[in-house]
Image (cartoon, rainbow, N blue to C red; front, side):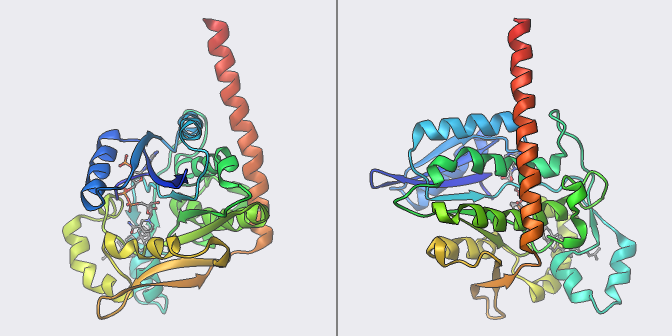
Length: 318
Ligand SMILES: NC(=O)C1=CN([C@@H]2O[C@H](COP(=O)(O)OP(=O)(O)OC[C@H]3O[C@@H](n4cnc5c(N)ncnc54)[C@H](OP(=O)(O)O)[C@@H]3O)[C@@H](O)[C@H]2O)C=CC1
Ligand SMILES: CC(C)=CCC[C@@H](C)[C@H]1CC[C@H]2C3=C(CC[C@]12C)[C@@]1(C)CCC(=O)C[C@@H]1CC3
């Protein structure tokens, strides 16, 4: 996976793709690869560490200097630090009726170790959800325009589980499944964005790539081990980055207003190896989604205030 956040924007009739990434070397490599396959594409790079709120504000500002319109915002970045398979839960699941679901979603068998960022947010929450939320808020004037509809796409997961998420602990400070919690929160947030912004031309949608062999999954088990269980995984879902991108590609071809706000669009592969996209109803409700949205707005105020105070401190010291 080449970029953290991929933004497509079009102005003066010319399409522009903006890859926002924290590692500029990888970003440049991705840009070059893109230009090889699409020589006429206009692709630009932007530095963005989505777990660092100051970087989010700076990147959004730079983007606004570059463009006055934004059609698609693809929120891809995600981390799963120090993942562990809970072997006890795994063997229990193996002999239960939940075994297929366990292999398809990793429900209940995957734990991670989270940490706190310098600004005081849980790292997984900050990277997988809050940084993206702040970016959407910052880019709101470009996304909400009267003459066209825009689409925000969240890269969620089938590991997004209601059981891992709590409204009393939206950052998942107390649990051991911050990844699952953050992905469930993104499903809820997508619905809330639709409720609050559809009348202003902003639409939000959620995709799931299935299980894709990337740095993220190689952190869970050694690659040779994952390769051994691939035939089993293949039976339950697709497993290459190309297959995983199917739903994203499909979404780009749809009218934003035609998408179902309650659906997660899954990339799937048939037994014959054909890729297709299928909407699955998400296990979310409007009340919970609204409650999370209110909490995120409060947290946004707190974070912005902290950043302003830090700036003031630096100014008074100089
Ligand atoms: N692999 C899978 O099976 C599945 C993955 N997903 C989701 O897909 C997305 C991509 O993950 P995947 O490609 O698998 O894993 P990778 O670890 O290979 O890629 C993660 C991407 O996120 C970027 N990233 C991480 N943290 C930050 C940050 N703080 N600021 C900017 N960019 C950041 C990484 O950038 P850098 O190159 O700088 O490290 C990298 O491009 C994630 O949201 C993940 O949760 C969902 C379902 C299944
Ligand atoms: C023999 C043994 C210990 C097998 C364990 C299998 C698990 C490693 C996989 C079963 C389902 C997988 C899965 C993911 C990671 C690997 C598994 C847990 C994800 C959680 C990876 C990231 C996602 O976003 C969704 C994936 C769902 C399925």
